Image (cartoon, rainbow, N blue to C red; front, top):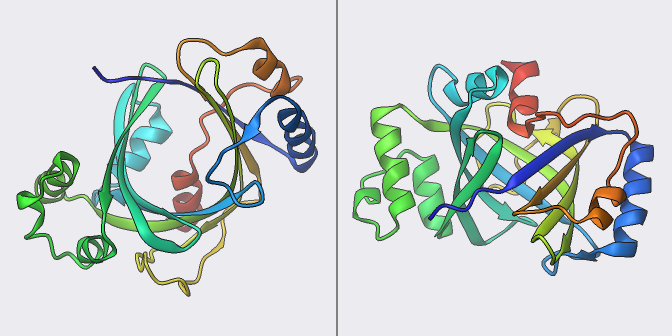
Amino acid sequence: MTQYRHEWKHEIDGWDQIAIRQRLRAVARPDGHAVDGRYQIRSLYFDNPSDRALREKLDGVNLREKFRIRYYNLDPSIIHLEKKTKRNGLGTKAVAELTAAEAQRIVDGELGWMPGSDRGLVQELYHKMRTQGLQPKTIVDYTREPFVYAPGNVRVTLDYDIRTGLWCTDFLNPDCVTIPAGEGVTILEVKWDAFLPDIIRDAVQLKGRRAGAFSKYAACRLPFS
């Protein structure tokens, strides 16, 4: 059975970021994969020629999905193919591992190996690249500070220094040039399962703020489309 999770997103400023970081350090713990409390994320997003994923996000379509390939700290030894699905404001994610060679072949349009993969998500991406015209669109880079809290399976992240590769899809090239996307905002994301503990709710409370629908992919596409 697919497990959907609740999700809040807030666009915050530098002062909010400092305050929330201090609160979270007092009540939660850093994600074990972080180095000095943070890590770098590089993602390659897919869309079709009419930018369906982008338009559905902007239009707030109730049921939508997007594919991306992702790795961390510019280390291609572990690469994930991910499909994120949103339904009724809740989110879920399917993940499959790729080798660096497989990721590069997808970027290069060499898809013949994909139908024979033993990973269903790889087969699904192949089918949608063939039938819907999905193709790599752009690189999105950013820094993430992750915190976790076991009750409720809560994960809180602070994402900033969001950068766009414009139309670049040279995903595995560490020297690929990216530029700042937008005005240097920080995105606070809060994800949880059945309940959000009050101690975390209080830690991320922002007076006068409302949950939003910020999309790093949209932020990296819209100013340059």
